[in-house]
Length: 141
Image 1 (cartoon, rainbow, N blue to C red):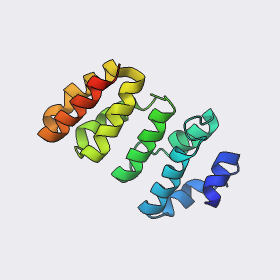
Image 2: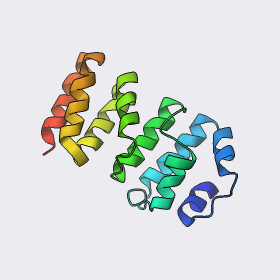
Image 3: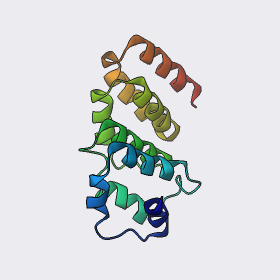
Image 4: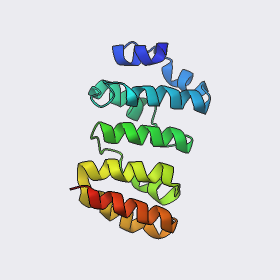
């Protein structure tokens, strides 16, 4: 909780990357979910976003749960700088709990891109996931 407060106040210690990396996956996810669910979580400053993206590099090299949480923050803040990594994620992880919210989040920003990536990867997914995601994409204008 202290790290979350420090994140929003811009007071993270210089060794935060090593601290974060030492945390168990559950603690990393707790930290990221708290950021995403915060009223300020959808309006991160560039500096705050850069901590997650450039300093911690949450788009790569972490457990799928951590990467998923980062991509949710990325989309909630309408940042598409890691779209290539998101594309790779879509082609690697087929669990609906991961892909459906990310496709919906992307479609709210760029429906054409979400549809393009979904069509690229949908043969990798379970038929129930395909139908569910197609139905969600149809609802988004």
